[in-house]
Amino acid sequence: MAAAASLLRLSRPRRALLPLSSLRLPLSTQPQPASSPAPPPSSPSRRFPHLLSFLAAAAAAGGTTFALCDPGVDHRVGGKDSTELVVKGERTRVPQEFIDELASFLGDNLTVDYEERSFRGTPQNSFHRAANVPDAVVFPSSQDEVQKIVMACNKYKVPIVPYGGATSIEGHTLAPHGGVCIDMTLMKKIKSLHVEDMDVVVEPGVGWIELNEYLKPYGLFFPLDPGKVLVPCPGATIGGMCATRCSGSLAVRYGTMRDNVINLQAVLPNGDVVKTGSRARKSAAGYDLTRLIIGSEGTLGVITEVTLRLQKLPSHSVVAMCNFKTIKDAADVAIATMLSGIQVSRVELLDEVQIRAINMANGKNLPEVPTLMFEFIGTEAYALEQTLLVQKIATEHRGSDFVFVEEPAAKEELWKVRKQALWAGFAMKPDHEAMITDVCVPLSRLAECISASKRLLDASTLTCLVIAHAGDGNFHTIILFDANKEEERKEAERLNHFMVHTALSMEGTCTGEHGVGTGKMKYLEKELGIESLRTMKRIKAALDPNNIMNPGKLIPPHVCI
Image (cartoon, rainbow, N blue to C red; front, side, top):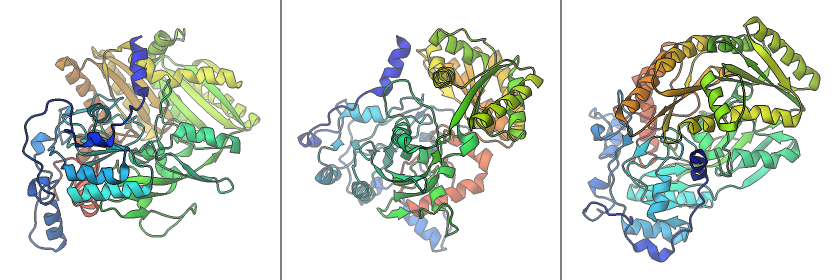
């Protein structure tokens, strides 16, 4: 029951919005500390951060050198060596005239109800928390409305937090500085499908699952699978998937989000609408603005339209599973499979703790040992040939119990083992939080990295489960801990820290697909170097001089330019 309750909260229906008459009520239904009246837009205390525009202009003019840093670093989370989990910010109450301006064109698609604001300011899949919540939630239904919202926020220096399917896990949708949450759920039109060109134009609120349902009759699909939940809920949306540069289990064959977006449109912080390219499959025209926006996590603009590359639905597929004595043996098989040139579409690894969780949650009786799962696609003959080649590789690495299925119902049943892994893990400790790692290393270092991590995890007092997209060197550890016990939180942080730094020492990354948000900022200087971070901050300052776009995310606060 506890596990079911945990799932049900993900599908909480949207509450009826307050009528316009309520917009003049206080912005919170809970007691708040007394504060002075909101200053006018031009007041220095409304600037975010203070003097940012002036300093950026001075730097551009080549005058005196200034150190442009986020103010109040001690009050932020995520900087180098940070261990804080609650994100604090510099919140200033938004003026009533700002709310009135939004209401003038949004009507009932604007709410200041505390429950609505708190729900969107509290991640549903993450232990990250912020000291504040949004001051208002808006539901634009068109690019024109997004543009007006952004222009109003820029005018009053009010922070913006874009919000999609609420599946991110690194604190991307926190609102530590208050401001406006732009919920994109009403922008879910599939605007045009070009079957012969194998592309589709969609709004950002379209979910990847519903998109593939729409495409199925045309024999096409969008080949990114970031995972899906087990209850009716929107799941990941295309806008959020672009913002975090996500990938998933099919990335080993089809690439990540950056490889599957042809172009997009976004509203920049000053209200300009930029289209990053044409529908041509390739182009050498100018800077690659598409890939600048993809992975920017809402810090450069609000995505309002995306043109996606599609693939033909495979004519036949085979799903296989194989057991191993050690996790290193399983990882070695994944590496050998990729080096052989076999075109697998998925290679997923689950450790023995994860299999135990699946058995407990679903009443199965699978051998509780490290397990590899494969999917092969193509013609019937080709898929079977590839399956038998991998079976031979697995046998050479002490693999056992190699099974494969081709019937649709059997494939669905077998693949549920992987699909249900995350929620099965939560079910082991339903009253615990999960710290989920996302390291990715060069494929040749996967076995070494995952083995070193596994030794530490097995010695820990915490329950830890390993799941890997083994075909591209990306693995996750679900570290379950009691957030009310400081010693458990510190132990989870210690394990996470070890795995990230082990991956970085192997020329890997702290995040293969989940993004940075607030949770991974502290590792970016070691991974990318300070000059890369300064370059990112210069781009941010140039496009967003008032720092209204998802402030406090992605770029560590200690970085100065």
